[in-house]
Length: 420
Image (cartoon, rainbow, N blue to C red):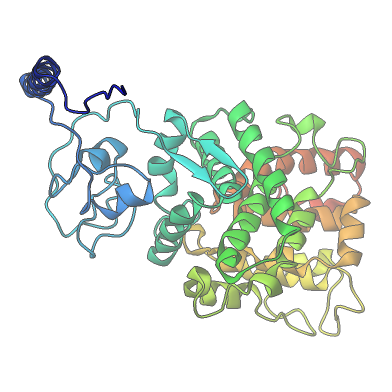
């Protein structure tokens, strides 16, 4: 006789299940009450958070008008469209259209912030996060230029998805901090060297891949940052050990090679295209590429024209100093406060192969023209000043040591009748 097992649960089994369910509900209620007693609410998914938190890939608490994440990060919360992404609270040049709560000393940033793409991930520490808002949320090049401030903010938004741009931007911020806070003999920090090295490696790898439209602005921004860094980082902090006093080496005039390398990407990235964030800089680019005279000495101070052996019949073909002397003379008469990046950029663009060879050979007149540009540009552009503070005294010492017979050249140096 077959024996069948009943599938109906026994009364004792049903009673046990009911007890377990009641116990679980009691435990959940107890945990909820405990969380509420501790002042915490169960986490819920944020659907209407601010754009800053979405950009930083963080959960927004949706506190209005200023969420806690934006307060701790030091940026203006942007629930409304009239506030740009990652606008620093400390930036007085632009007033937000919403009232801001008074925020006390910024706490240490424990929120995770990172930059990543499909192959690379880097999490920013507290110092890097601080530098993002302290320096990168505004323009480090021309702080009083609203268009450059806007360019910098848009670039900052791209750093979170383009690690090579993030590392380059952090290296520039660290170099700017070095300019502000270091002694005349200040050296690069380990962090600055690290971020520059990482950016260079990632950038070179990225350039070996196909370039899409959305990559063009980050690539041009990184190229510009690396060119700036090459200028802001002389080989040594001691004039006695600097070029042109030191022995010839592969790093001589590296800043010029980097500047030329940046311009080689111009056609690829086309910063003047209508959808480029750099399109707003078209006037500066036009000024940088403005043509120089084809003949004569109009605009060149007479003593400088005499030193360079220039006259009304001089041309680029007949005199290797012609273009550079005109480029330097364009800024010599301007007040320091009126010198722009476009005007400063004319000089590197005017250096052709024959003049570069004269510099490498330490020709005294070529060195004088470079010295005059250093002196003028260094008083207006901080990254030029970082190199000028070392190489200006080095050039003076070199000319006084090895070219004492060039009295006309010495008149332009400190203590001379034509010194500026």
